[in-house]
Length: 506
Image (tube, rainbow, N blue to C red):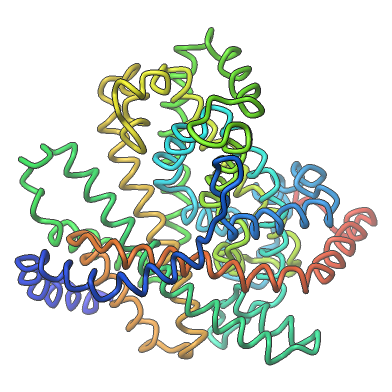
């Protein structure tokens, strides 16, 4: 492992230090080459139409339709099995002899690390700015519906996972699309969808799950260390190199190493952020009732910038869909590694993911922005995105922008860890599982951390974002076809629970 890390350090430092000197020219060249392709792909994937002044993206409707379908088809399992899901993640039903690599909690932490990120800090602020406080209500509702969709896809991930000869696990949509649809007599169609999903996942992991995260964390780091006058201002390559080395030491160890880091990092960073948010909310405790009334009332008659009530609904649903990734098919890859012989148990654990990501963390962010007065003063401050969130926290805790910068970097780093695993599993599905194949991908992934830190590759990121959401097309097609399989799994599990054959561990 050390030799691989050393190789990455030496090669990267020589290559990217020279590349940094000419990054403006490279930026321009890459942008000019990829812009036409990116514009076509992004324009197609994120095609939208306007109703009452609100732009509605087709891909978001696709995700929402899947979430609504799963919520009703599984009889509101996000409510009926919520307490049981908490017991599962707490290890109340764990069996150490079950097949798999990580615990229920570690699998959940890894998946959450891929969803809890800059979107929870910056994306929510954008949603509230554009859709008004009422967007928060619809964001919470979308998160609630997304819990059932996440349950379905993660149950399928565990059911159709592949146990490799070395005991490691490979799972995700590429496996349940190929194996599950083969059982339905659609082997060729399933294989095509699996390959399509894998290609998109690799592209999305390198772009949105890597380069964008590295770029944004570098920008936040520079902003709190002096801005344009910072020593780091023109040393994105060095920041990226350090980040790549740290990342490499984590991902080279595989899912067990990743799970150990995320199971500690995710709770740590989430607690820091949530505690700070709750402190601010408590400072404005007398404003909370008015804020809640405002959020609910403006959800139906808001002062949104565009689209009125419909605008708030669309913005809220889009923010939730982009944040918790329910339906994209990324989370089942992490959840598939769980130690469990009953697929539905991890499906139930996974429904906590949108609850934590969207209903809790995103809601706290929105409340802080509203009760602190930052939203009402936004027209004066001109702050948007993460800057608006920073202003909201700073109004009560003057030094919090430094903590926010740290949180942004930790959020970004955890997202990169998770997406490295998603990309790796898609890579090995296409090119086979071997030490050489895995190490090639890991070196490529770490190298792109450096590129993302030092370059402004707009079209590359647009293209990768498109690929991430293209994953949802293949994934949700599979969910519709295989929903009956999951229905049988949950019915069988209910029978086992009622008969007493499954009991809590002593």
